[in-house]
Amino acid sequence: MTTGGRRVFTGRGVTVRDVLEDLVATEPALRVHLFDDTGAVRQHILIYVGEKDLRWIAGLDAEVGDRTTITILQAVSGG
Image (spheres, rainbow, N blue to C red):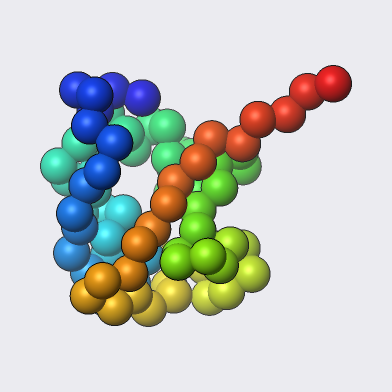
């Protein structure tokens, strides 16, 4: 991904969706890597809110606090 070498970002928002939208507003090149054409998180992107997998909580509508850490990972598969 193109972030100029940055690996840590600070975002604002009430939900995960808000924070990710804030992130792509700052780093527009990330949008295509994070979201598909429908606006859903791409299949092979893993997002954790704290230590919880986004898929097992309220999804993008999960609420976040002021100091919540959101981790975005590219899933790796193969054999």
